[in-house]
Length: 159
Ligand code: CDP
Ligand code: MG
Image 1 (cartoon, helix red, strand yellow):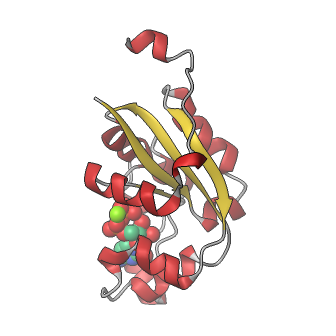
Image 2 (image 1 turned 90 degrees about the vertical axis):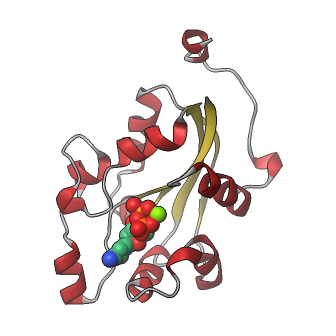
């Protein structure tokens, strides 16, 4: 099933100069970028995006991290795009993320270390976790006229 999903390159990914490398991972599998922009979100917006986490103990660290610099936000389209992008991104905790995933290849921090230091887990990327979450998040981050309908060559292979 063709789905759309929201991907963010978080401030740590932007600051580390990994924008191109991260986008490349998604383009290589044939996902289509239908929307993309750079935006520096404030705390109010962060609370909307991470509404499921606002009450959690790690939220202050997460909020500080996601608002510390600009992010790249993208809407990607493809077959089972939500599940596929989560696989490409890897597990939340970089220490446990499989090599070959973005988080497994470019980070190694653990929950234990982050908790001890009282900091958020810098794991480079956000990807919507479910279809419902993807719909809500795309609506939050993108206006209808910021997403584009066009054909790319990969579509020839999945028709
Ligand atoms: O991003 P993902 O959906 O994999 O994980 P999440 O459970 O929805 O958590 C959102 C983000 O909060 C994570 O990607 C981490 O950056 C951060 N986090 C954290 O800093 N400390 C934790 N103990 C758990 C999550
Ligand atoms: Mg999540």
